[in-house]
Image 1 (cartoon, helix red, strand yellow):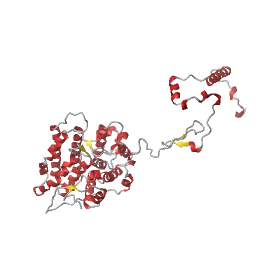
Image 2 (tube, helix red, strand yellow):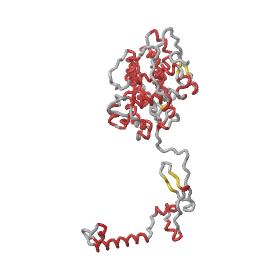
Image 3 (cartoon, one colour):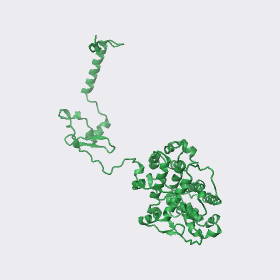
Amino acid sequence: MAESEINYIDIPQTGFSSEESTRKERLAAEEVAEKMASTPEKCDSQKQREEENPMEQNPADEGPSFQSPPPLSAAACSRCPCGEPVNFPNGDGFGLSPPPVPTNYRPIRAPALLTPPNTQAVILAPVPQAQKVSIVSAPYSFQIPCRRISSPVDIEHFHNSDSGRSFMGFVVALSESIRSHKISDECYESPSVKGIVEILGIMDAWIDEIPPVQQPARYGNPAFRQWQDRLHQGQELMDRLLAPDIRASIPEIFPYFTDSFGNAMRIDYGTGHEANFAAWLFCLARLGVITENDYQAVVSRVFVKYLGLMRRLQTTYWLEPAGSHGVWGLDDYHFLPFIFGSSQLVDHKYMKPKSIHNQDILDNFSDEYLYLSCVAFVKKVKKGHLAEHSPMIDDISAVPNWGKVNSGMLKMYKAEVLEKVPIMQHFLFGSLIKWE
């Protein structure tokens, strides 16, 4: 017999007879017919919903006069903001029209890198390059620094000047000096570097001597003002670094130093204060106190000590973030450690940008790499998932390698810190950082 002539219905099923199977099928069909014929009793919650929203009523309740709505037209078909097609009944059916798609719709969690308004300008900008710092020579003309920037025109003037290019080049040179090095790697430590670390250690001890005041508010502990008063009275700290022939520069470089640790009146700290610390180091380089041979130690010893001091100040006196960019910002307080930290990890054999999501890596290597240290600190002080409270850090983790992260950080630092009037309006200019 050919396969097409086989009657599969007549083949008895194993385990029960064909008559029993037919009877069960008949009973099942009758049960389905009874359920379809009867309308189930509605629960109280369903009745309440139908009273509030007639749209939820069962069309069968309207009796034989109920007719299905006509087919949807192309004009009645819209699309959900998430991208999925959605059909809405037209006016001839339930009396509804398609809701308009909002023109200013933003998803709950848009890619953070697209949030800043000048993202395209940052992407297209050239990567800043390292520059050598020119050392001043006698006769000196030191002066008390003052503010010069008050508009975007002043910002452009600064960055087109030799001082602006030299300062940014100094930051890039520090970043390159720490490339592929751990914090604990051996490096040359000059007496100047050791002196700066000693000064920061003295200031760290002041925190133990000035405990925070008990208050109901979490942020802005007024005890920070006492710490700042002691700082402003500590000009003799500069004597530890400067040779007698350049101590006349103290009135010029000390304001950069005092502005590096936050504002006593507002009890806040931000990237502008951090930029002042970089400017103070730049002034020391201009004076010849630190040289290019010191750059690696300036990052791995001096800046790491400074970052640790600021973390203590932030968590002891709970300094307000000054000019925080909110959820799309990297960190409420710092930017430079992301630059230096990404440079450390360039060409690392095992750790990639996505490795920040591995908690074991953060726990075991944050003491050696500034970038991991920053991510660990952010996760410590902020609750929730990293993608929620720090979406930019989360998005950057998708970049394929640390070299791209580092170059992007340098461009972003120039655009988001050094080119922002609210930050740079407090920047000081004198004879070492000239307003040309």
